[in-house]
View (tube, rainbow, N blue to C red):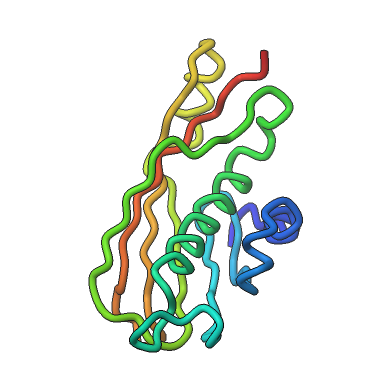
Length: 150
């Protein structure tokens, strides 16, 4: 893993109480990829016994936040990351533990160049949510921005 920053997961769990509420596990968190796992927990099941759609959304959004911290943590002295829009598609029935894998849709260099130019860059984070058998149960795209400090 390149540029592994062991504190990304700790930072996420410390700053996003909902991630701790769902007992999300940070499997991997780097500037290139973030992988979070939602354990199978009855308290967060839906009417068919799998993870609730809201819990899966939070899992995916949290994975996107982890990669944003990993990729742009060095820019937080001058900008705050904010989610702008989110879209999710539920593809297959999710049962048991599920994992969200997030990747950036633009390079860090492109986003930082826009920030350097005085712009408020936006960039997509793409997330795949999978069951333990590898089947993709959901796909998300979250558009993030880096809002410069006033």
